[in-house]
Image 1 (tube, rainbow, N blue to C red):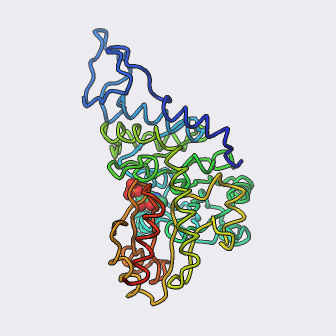
Image 2 (image 1 turned 90 degrees about the vertical axis):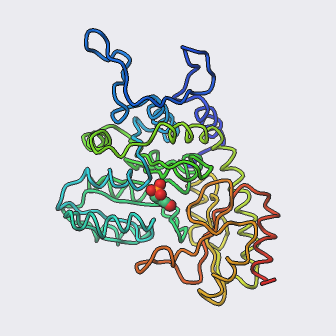
Image 3 (image 1 turned 60 degrees about the horizontal axis):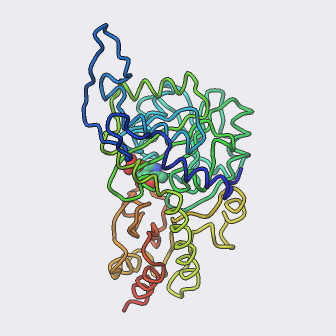
Length: 382
Ligand SMILES: Cc1ncc(COP(=O)(O)O)c(C=O)c1O
């Protein structure tokens, strides 16, 4: 279940070749960008070249979907205009009155979607700690249809053992959706651990350069449920643009080596922060003392590029540290080449689970010594 270095060799090849071919018309090696929204119909009224209107399907989106399905090991993948649009597409495939159980720490936008929009729509929900299977079982009702598990989580970097959750889902005939945005298919293989669907904010590591927005649902095995998600994509119209698809496909080509360097940099940054006197706690599963360390060591190839840390002095000191940074950029989002830092509680609002003293750090691809030097001067206050 843990991705092996051998699998990573395969992923590296797939990330460059899957969904793409040398352009038969021109011989272009890199995939052309197709901006046309409409495609010619055959004289007999057929569409022998498959495409007819870009909301329904487009060449760059199709390439991206094929590549994502191959990378996650799924039968299909359905791409959207953002990670949130992909999440929304999953929940709308349920029916009003259905019940979903979600892990208590998760991207706050999904929490807002569930407690706001979908609560008004009639979808019921419970938040539990999915690291406790008994708590998960007790939250289930006859109308429970779906478990939503993000691991590692945003922003507390909590790690949940996917397999027991998948076994519980199977025994209750509930669908398991796993958010794999932080880990990526390079580090974690949810479908192989029993998840039915994987959701990604492609905006993050998979695109990798903070210059494209997208989301995707990767389908383990096609079903009526996944057909409803596909229908929602085509009819609802929150489709990913050709240019974003093209940019993400370009970014995907370096996913494997980028993830290797993100992990290596994050490990060094976490080690540095964990001994710093100004830091009260580091949330990073690569640290031996982290509550998620044992599970992450088993379930992930490496520990990822995301970490959070808490500083002594609460909110004012967290803001002060962030304000003194010179290299690391104070900005939302993650998974790009630049290191980005964010005070999550002030972004997430009233229902945040982030401590006021917490800063989330997306460790970028700059030299680790430079990232550490910047953190050091900011934490020292000089
Ligand atoms: C884990 C996770 N899931 C989903 C999203 C939403 O993605 P998007 O901003 O592309 O809608 C984010 C955004 O930060 C995220 O961090």
